Image (cartoon, rainbow, N blue to C red; front, top):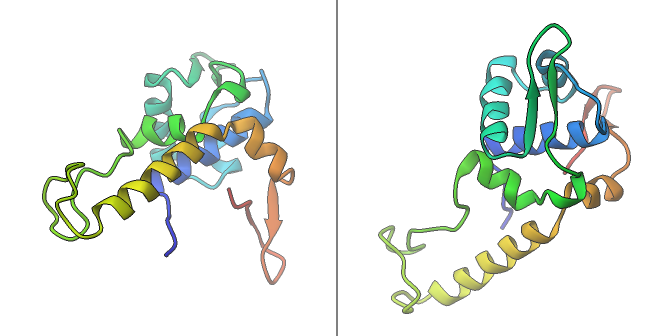
Length: 152
């Protein structure tokens, strides 16, 4: 089974990694969107969520843009995902689709709860700095010579 981010969370992670690469410098919204291949309309929405969560600091005006609101090492992947998606904890039963509880109401409840807990722990422990150290290149070549954003 492969777990994937929603498009919104994917864009948020890409944007935050780009901001971390820029250090304390400002990057305009249009440049950020182009750099990480996010549609500009969607970039503005995602950046608004990241600003509201206190992860990104906006600067308005002619030389405005965005930068991280605090050091990259203090921002977890979980904080980024939750900034755009809300609480990442699954609230519905895997088998029944209704509300889920910790009382073991279905056959797979404990298995999926443990897996979810492990995933959330891992995301909470992974900072932007750690992600950048794992993958130093900003882009990776696609077959045929095209460039794509690096996998996170």
